[in-house]
Every structure is written in C-alpha cells, then in structure tokens.
Length: 383
Image (tube, rainbow, N blue to C red):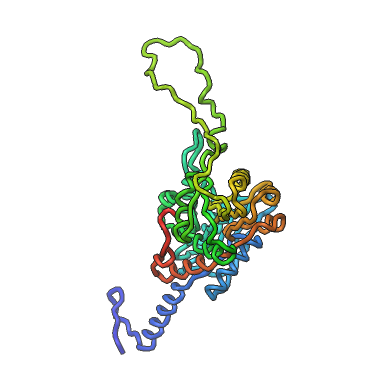
C-alpha cells in the first residue's frame, strides 16, 4: 500500500482510493468540457432560431425561464447546473430593443454568478449598431453597450454583418462578425430566374463596396445611385446656426475662420446602365423603407424591369410592409437574424433566408477550439 505524506503527516492511501480520486477528477474534467445553449427570451422567433441551432448541433435547448414581473422588471431563472461549462445565449432583437438588452444582461450575469466557464452571446443583429459614431451632441451608444455586456459577464460574441466593422474595437473580448452574403448569393442564383441579366445596385456611395463584393462573386455589373438625401444626419437642427449672444467683450475677439459652405445635395443620378436589367439593391439593414422605395422608382424610370432588395437584417419598422407592398419593389429578401413574422403576414413580397447553419457551425468551432477561418473563406474584406 503506497504511503502519501500530507501536511507533514504520513497517510496510508490504497490503490482503490487513488483510482476513485482519479475517476472523480476525470468526471470533473468531462463535465467542464460540456456546453449548453440557452434562449434569452421566450418569443417565438428567438426560440425557433435557438431550436434550429440546437437541432443542427444535436443538443437540447437549455432550461431557463425569462419573464417580466408586474413592475416590468426582467427576471431570469436558470433551471440546470452550468458550472464549468461553455454557455451560448441566443438573443434575437425584437421591436422592444431595450427589453431584449436587459434580458441578455440579466441572463449573462445569472450564468456568471452560477460559475459558467465561458459565456458567449449569439446576437445575430447587434442593437444600437447605427449609433457607433459621434452625432453632433449625441453619444456613442454602441460603445456603452459593449462595456455593459463585458461587465455582465460575456466573454465572446457571435454576430452577423455589423453595421460598421470598426465596432469590434469597442469590445474587450473577441467578436466573430459572420457574413450572410453566401446565403443571399445562393438565393440569387437559385431563386431569381435569369439572374445573369441582373445588375447589382448600391443605393448610396457608402454601400458601393458591399455591392461591389456581391457583383464580383456573381460576375455581374455594378451601378451606384448618387445624390440621395440623408435626412437622419443633415436635416436635424441642433442650434449650431444660432446667432451668438450679444454681449460686450474685451480683449481678443477670436480667430477669423474660413466661411463654412453648406453641402448642396445634387439631383439623384444612377451611375451605370440598368435599362432592361434586373436590379438587385444590396444593403446590410432595411429599416425605414422610404429610401428604398424612392430608389426603386428611379430604377424603374431608368428601365429596370424587376427590382429586388437584399439585406441581412430586416427590421422593417413602422409602415414598411405597406410601403413595400404599394411600391415598385418586386421582392425583399432578408435573413432570420431579426424577427419579422408579422411583417411577412402583412406583405407577401418579404422572403426569408435561414442563417442558422453558420451560427451553429460557429458555436461548434468555438467550443472545440477550432479555427473560424473556414467560415470566412472567399469573403471580401468589404463584404
């Protein structure tokens, strides 16, 4: 029987006891290598996406309850042990964005305090991504949200088509920004008859790089629309043109600055021939559709006989379904990164592409410590 010395005293430990300790240590290691997938809310869209992902992974959806108390506070109850495991939280962003954010934060913190090994947020559409730059006297809300997620306990994020790729620099932990373009390109090739007669259209010069990436992979021509007014930034009065207060000053009166010339919006033009072609407008987000409707009318006037819109995230807010239905747009194709079942019922022109396959593969690779490069093959930097 072997002799083991503990704290200066000799102790007799049998071989059977050593084997039991080793077996227990092995079991502990096995449990630490597991992973679980949870849904951050009980909405139909989020649970459906989570079920599609878990079915592809061959695992069961984690047991948890997320609900709103009578005073609208968010409460999360995790119904199983997560100690030492990799936890993936699926969170789609419905219309109530702020509630969805709180659900994600509270669930992440609950898992953190339950001793989860790693907490990975699967957020296909990252909210507040449009507020990633300083807007006059506003704030960079996207940076604030990144700090909140890190504080809540998240250690990694999987998302799809960030509005600006520089957003990844806001985070203190890894961010995998997956691309939906392969699925949308596959839809173009399989579901649009005579797509070889199509032309890829950028709705504005800022979307030209993304559209060019699609055009090169599909071997199609490229057209760019120029002169579109950007009401969100330029037409908001912020008081910068207010006259200064009339008061007597002494001493230095300030420097003579050059005259600031206001931007003149040129008339809308289309650079590229769309006559007799299928026009496919490419963008990452389709929310307020007035600009898309106006672009479709211009393309129709220039001779395009069919107009498609391809976007990753279909927010489709306000009167978007009605405006699309009454417009010259033939079809709007978006992915299931954002719930839009109600909008589809209101407008049959809206079609959905499933991207759960790439999310499931990302989860599997992250858990197994495999390279993510395979998911980005043949993907351009500007995609």
